[in-house]
Image (cartoon, rainbow, N blue to C red; front, side, top):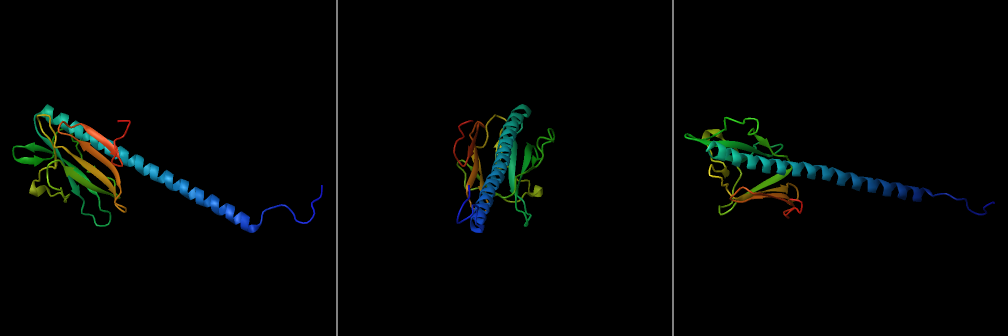
Length: 187
């Protein structure tokens, strides 16, 4: 059969529009996949911290010595971030724990996030840099009697200020993980 008049096919404009749509969809999918990886990494960091806080509470009870976590702002101007320094109460004051050194090594929090620490019943906590010469007390304390300073730690997107994750704990050290500030149905 022979066609008369026009031949079948796509015009250049139609092909360009189709390519543009494909590129746009590919970009959206790759952005979502990249964000998902960052969200999984953040969730892993929050769960790891919750586990370490629970371990420090158990260690405090077993060793009959208070343990704590000092969250400090790193002073690196190019890539500002946060670190966690584990401390144990000795007669002379707070210092690095001697046992379980590999468990209580310094935490390096992921960059790109702003951390906000809120301790129940206490004024707003300002996260400063850590100076061991000042012998600072940790903000989060797990006492030898089994209690813990109740509070929460929030991870906020540094660019938008959006709440990404919240970790809450009560006086007994029970942890609640809250993606986007809401209770996760799985926990």
